[in-house]
Image (cartoon, rainbow over all chains, first blue to last red; front, side):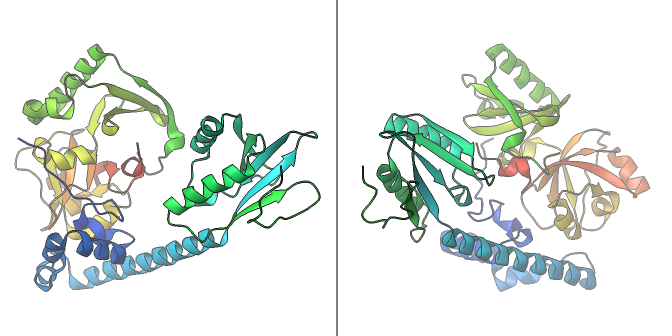
Length: 191
Length: 179
């Protein structure tokens, strides 16, 4: 006996026949029609929908589908909100002077984008050959501390990272912690 | 069991010895005799299984970055991905359409959902504490795995209260766990 090949929905990860019970039914439907029209027709053609009656009373069925619809709408609103939040938030790269010639940079605001800080810190330390650690800032947010003045390099790296996730609009801001508050992002920080 | 389960519940991961892996394999086949012809596909002979120890004495076994089965005390349970692939090897029960919604939010399965017109219990008797895969009316694939809280004959005769304790279902923490 061979293993069955199962297609899972790209949106909610369920087998497509269970999408209707998931929280993102509309998007699942769209995904399926784009990716596997055969199965889509099988599941959502008028004929199939007519056959999908169950042994339950109509009343009960109606109630269940109403509840589900409500939940799905809620979920959709939540997804939208989250995306808006993502687009609004920004990443801050702060350069902190340790003594006259030495700096560290602190990167905050990444946790909104589902980036794993621990992995990123490892990548940083191997890519830039420096020490890199995660700590909490005063207002209980996670930050990544990188030794050395790498704010330009880190900026490019994070921008690429965000681009991969399809979040081009997100701003990456560079700040110098030495009185001069903000610098134009284009010019970059002086050495 | 996995309703609230995330990466934070994982304590340690380690490779297991090949002798332990052999024992695990034979245990797994003993629990589910239908697996015998295909066990080498699920757990290949030369593979390296990884043991992932979690909160509440749950142990997951992963092969090739995919969690294949898990163990809670003496119960060996396959994950739903494996059940989907080799669906004929495990005892099946079926619930009616009205129950799907509740099962997918992690509820235990009540007897009437199994005995009504949309539900289905196998002809032969399944004893208490058997691990069964749960299917749904009009659907092809399994949606959950649970343990019988009473024998299937008892479910038919009593027809009241909890019949199956839900262990693992579509969309729970284990399902969503990315390796």
